[in-house]
Structure formats: structure tokens, C-alpha cells
Amino acid sequence: MNVVAITTLRLHRLRVGSSCATYLSTITSSSPPSSSLRKRRHYTAYAWGTSNKGTIPLPEIIEEGSKAGAGGGSGATDLLNRGTVIDNPREIDVEKAFGSGTDGSPVTITHMECGPTGTATILSDGRCFTYGSNKNGELGHGNKKDILVPTQLTVPESCPLSETGISSIKLGNNFSAIIDKNGNLYTFGFDGSTFSGGMGYLGHGDGKSYTSPKLVESLVEDGCHASQVAVGESHMTVLTTEGEVLTSGAGSYGRLGNLETTDQLYLEPVDMLVAEDIVHISCGSSFTLALTKDGIVYGWGQNNKGQLGVGLGLSVDIYAMEALPRVIEGNLEGRRVVKISTGHSHAAAVTDRGELFVWGSSIHWEPELMTNFLHTKYFIYILSWLTLSCF
Image (cartoon, rainbow, N blue to C red):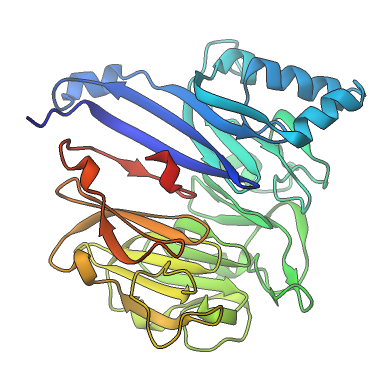
């Protein structure tokens, strides 16, 4: 018998070395949620895995981070660098981790985003905290110092983001991106270089890196508003409110989806998807997936580990790639996908039947149905940096 036991489940991958941390916020119910239940929902965040440099905000980890930040000795710093293993879900104490609201009232977590080496948390009062490794300024605090405890992201008053507020945030290994509540895009971190495999990660066109959020002015000039943004190792993908897919950054391995392998300093349209009604995007390290309204998944970029789910192709090596968007079929053919997610070199999709498919990591070269989940129907929201071990 199928029982709807999880009405909302958010899974995030936090990549730290060979380990990962996962955040889960959930509410349980024996039946589908009613409108009154939705109004009364209370979300609780849990975390487990390996926390490096304070990426899981548990009391003991925050204490060690505070000691290290205040010159508390090499012991605290060593512990933060080595990582703390949390081998079972632990509830995040919101007040201890982030304090009370700006007016002194209690706050709740509305979103937790895990990048490869850092974490971001958006609270119900609109404040955003980022913490973790900050070697490229990817946490947006105006410097490149590691942020060992949850620290509120602030921007100069001259920056429009100080007035509009943050709608969503994506963290990457080299850079990060924010969409404000007006649909404007801000990026910060490393823009790349000719010696690092490509340029243009941030999409500003000036070849400069920034340690604080900077508005991507070219989109404003073109009258474009962003609804989603996804970041890879050295490329960025944006979905506009008009359904257009834009990419910038390193062009190697076909990351940008326009056949060419040259870098793009500005965000440019993916021409093959202009006629498609795209509703969701997700970036892995060197590839991108896009989901259409009809439930069809496109993929492009590097395919050395089967992360595109299109099979072996002519060669299986580090140069395997798809330079243009290609429909992912195989076991997904005839099914309607409703959610996609990507990890470093693997991906996952959920269908409207509640089926979970995964591929990549040199394990599955095409979408593989996870049969151990067929006994239960899930309403699942899988966010970026999903890892197979989370399931």
C-alpha cells in the first residue's frame, strides 16, 4: 500500500573532500496536505555528514568556529579543517545558529543551500547567512577569509541588493550567484583566467573577480529578469522569466551548449533551446541539464562519467562531451520528468509517477530506475549537489 508520508523533502549535497553533508527539512502527514495544513506548516531543518570549516551550524561546531575566529588556538582550527562527522540527522537550532529576527521575534529557515564548500541560509525575515570555505570570495563578504560561523551577508548601501532583498542563492566552488526579489542577478567570486581553464564565470564581461555581490548589468540593459540560476565549476546557466536559457564562462567540453568551445564573458542564449519551454535548470561540475514543461530533459557539456545520461557514445574518455543540448531518453522515454538535480558528475530525475532515476559517476551511463523506492510515492524537491548516498 502506498502511503504519502513525506509531503515536502529537500535534499542538498555539500561536497567536502570525499564526504558530504545533507540538509533535510520535512513535515510528515498520512494524507496529502490540505490548504489549512499548508498554512500551519512548520519546517524543521536537520543536517548530517561531514562539516568542514563550519558548514553545518550545530552548537559545538559554532563554538569551535568562534574560538578559531577569536584566536582560540590551533586545536579549534585543526578541528574545523579536519572536519566533524555527523553520522545521524541533527536538528538545527535556528536561534542559536542565527539569532532572533531583526525585531527580536523568532525566525524560521526558509531555504538552505549547500555548495561544494559552503552553506547559505535564508531566514523568514529575509536575512541571508553564508559560511564555510571562502578562498575565492564566493561567500560574498568582501574578502577571501574563511567564514567559520554563520555570518549575515551584507552589501554596501550603494548596491541595489541592499534594498531589494534576496530571493535565491546558489553557491559554487569558485563563484556564487544571487537572484533578488526583482529578478536581478548578482554574481561574486572568481571570474576565471586563461590559466585556470576559462574565463567569464561571473558574466560581467570585464574579466574581473569580485568578493561582494555585483549586479550583472548586461541583463538589466537587455530587459531580462532571472527566475533561476545554476553554477558549475567554471560556467553559469540562467533561466529568464521569459523561459530563455543563457550561459557564460568556460566553453571547454561544450559547457555553454552552443557548439563552440570558446569562453563567453557575457551571458548568451543557448540557441537550440529558444523554441523550448524550459522550466528548470541544474548545473553539475562541467555539464548542465534543462527540463521542459512537457517533462523532457536536455543535457549538454562533459560526459566522461555518463553524467549526461545519453549512453557511451563513440568514446569514453575525459574528452567525451555533447556541445549542443541533447534529449536524455533511455528509460526516461515516454515518462514525464517533474524534477531534475545534478551533482559533480552524476544526475537524478523524478517523474510524475514518483519514480527516481539516477545516472553518471561511471556507474550508470543512462537513466537507471531506483527500484528500491517503488513501494512508496514521494513528493520530492531535489536541489543541487544531490548525492547518491543521500538515498
